Length: 92
Image 1 (cartoon, rainbow, N blue to C red):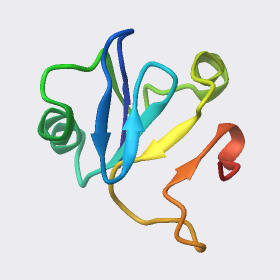
Image 2 (image 1 turned 45 degrees about the horizontal axis):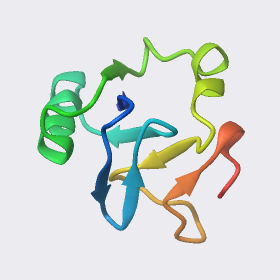
Image 3 (image 1 turned 60 degrees about the horizontal axis):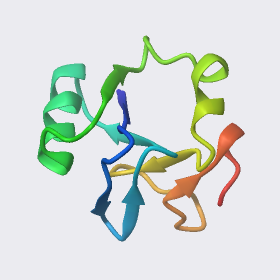
Image 4 (image 1 turned 180 degrees about the horizontal axis):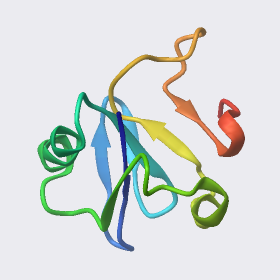
């Protein structure tokens, strides 16, 4: 199950060699929605804006606000080992 995490204007974090900020969406892979939110706090502390569970996230309504697209925090990486992907799943 995926948890999508967004950040406020002044929230900037560095996790797994990636920078998370207001221009991207963090994607956390977890077995349950509750564990995904728990991991969001483990990775980012209390400094993130919102967390959405997979069934709540509507890509076409929300992704255009995040020009850097998705950044995976954990979980399976793309075949080429990339951990970042932009709108529509395009690697950055």
